[in-house]
Length: 341
Image (spheres, rainbow, N blue to C red):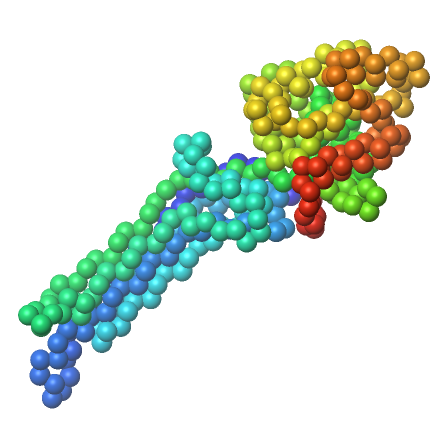
């Protein structure tokens, strides 16, 4: 399944049906009076968050959604049929934006949450509605109200408890594959990961969702590489796991590059709790591990976990630290919903 997290959609609600101007005509009934029915309501356009989706790819192939118009009223006091509503089913975490791509109309984060994007037009009144004691035979009827036409943007921000950040080839995909059933692409060249990956991680009988986003580079907050395209996916995470490649000769610079980009992108990411880990230690000797861990601790001012995603070294300890931070951020973590890639 292809991943798509931004889609432009054109919607239009249905117009209301016109009211009917008619008069009762039956044998032996003189002056039957008005009997025109009202027009039906136009269909509305809704958006609803549903389970089982993790991409907006359906909206790449269909961008136009038009609800049905209401039917006009008829004689014998018959009201026209209302137009059917249209429901846009979107993944959890989808934001509905106005045409300017800045105004947030809704943020759908709960299963079943709904928002009406365009209300259908009311049906027009038939001439029966205009009958009064002084106007016994009105000949007027109202037209239906037109539908609403607008352009909206759907922007998906994946919902995960923990997010993996780091430079390209820091070992994020290897780590996710080691701790979950996710199978991201793994290779020895930069930008192997081109789309976010989700995995359900288990530790000590507890579960949480972890997201791996494509690697960040210097200038990612300004659009270099794949930065701004996917940084939004870690905005909802309760904690970030920052992986630093231990085999790099510039680990402190690598660390500061990621922190700078997170803080430059938004205050939300800059203030988010982070757990720092020195990765790929299976390819290092004890002295290198000690020296580079000490350098990272000095640069970050906090503890540094020593791990190896490929060898499984220190993985359980860092997972326990992540889950403990998740519990602090959310005292009652919700049950993990079934997720499939």
